[in-house]
Each structure stands twice: as structure tokens, then as C-alpha cells.
Image (cartoon, rainbow, N blue to C red; front, side):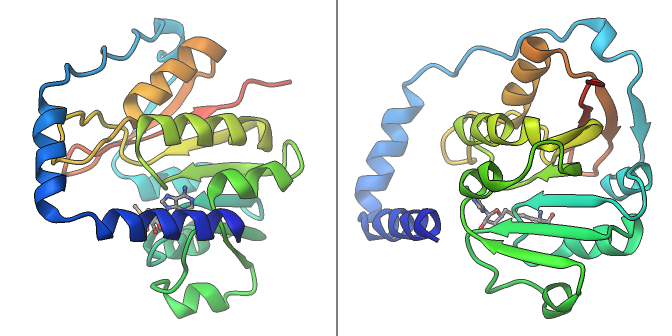
Length: 214
Ligand SMILES: C[S@@+](CC[C@H](N)C(=O)[O-])C[C@H]1O[C@@H](n2cnc3c(N)ncnc32)[C@H](O)[C@@H]1O
């Protein structure tokens, strides 16, 4: 809860900054060169990757009756799909606020909702607890790196660490998507292979890495 309060205070502070000041900051950021591109991923980490038509199809590759965690739930659209299609025994949802979440998701007896920062929730989980952790919270490079660092030990060996919006957007005004960079860096550093690549109509792909066997 403390993490979630800090996050809300930060949001309130950002809202309080006058628009002209924000506009000047955006222009100044345009002068900054973009960060370097992501490292090349060794071929052997990609050769076994299966292409899927969409992210929902990923849920057919998680064992039924498993334990799943979604980092970033918002209205619960994907959580609903996880419940219906992966049929988990437990679904842990983590978000700074569940105010907008579908009440039918919140009422499902398999669901535990954790209203806090993702990086506050994960350290309290046992290692190798989850069949899949789905990362879809803050998409900045630093935040995704922090989520990966907190999540990697919590995935079962052979389980999946999946990411929404596997994209690179580094231009101010368009949002900051560092998911692609953070995932590629992690693959190269720790050698987790890409198991699934999910297509998406807006080219905002999902990918799932498989934790190597112990
Ligand atoms: C893109 S939405 C999630 C959408 C959802 N996964 C789906 O596909 O239906 C991102 C959510 O992450 C939450 N969020 C962002 N940063 C967070 C953080 N550091 N810790 C917890 N939740 C966070 C936001 O409140 C928001 O509800």
C-alpha cells in the first residue's frame, strides 16, 4: 500500500505541473538523442519461437490449473481471458488501483487482487511460484527492467515470463515504451529463449520467454 500511495502522490504531483511547463520540458527532451538500440539476440534464443495469431492464444500454452500473475490489470480485459482460457487455480492481479476493474473478475474465487506496486508485490512471493507472469504495468525501460528483476526468480523453471507491448517508442509525446529494449537486454544477459511471439493489429506485440530448466 505504501508503494501505491507513493505512486498516486507522484501522479498528483505531475498533474499539478502547469501545461506550459510540461510543453517546455517536452521540447527540451526532443533535443536529447534517443537511447541506443536493443542488442541483437543470439539466433539460438529465437529458433524455437512459435508464432501465435494473438495474445489470447498464448493462454493455451499455460498448464490448466496453474498459478498465474498479471502485473497491471486496469479494467481486467486480459484477466477475464486468462480466467476463461487458461483456467488457472489461482490468478494474482497486481495494480496500483482496481477501481476500474470488472467486478466479475474481482468476484471470481480464483482471483487475489493486490493493490500495490508490482515491485512491492513480487518480493513477497515464493520463488518458482508462477506458471506464468504477464508483465503489463509501467512500460518505461527502467520500470520493465525492475519488473523483470523482481519477477524472474518467481517463475517456475520451464514457466513463462510474458510481456505486452513488445515495442520501442522513444519519442517524447508518444509515450515511452522500453519493453523491447528491456526484454532484449534480459535475453542476452541471462539466456532465456523466446518461446512465443504473438501478433497484434497495431504492431504492439506480446512475447513470452521461457525460464530455462533448473
Ligand atoms: C496497460 S494497463 C493493463 C491492461 C491489462 N493488462 C489488460 O491487458 O487488460 C496498465 C496498468 O498497470 C498499472 N500500473 C502501472 N504501473 C504500475 C506499477 N508500477 N505497479 C502496479 N501497477 C501499475 C496501471 O494502473 C494500469 O492499470
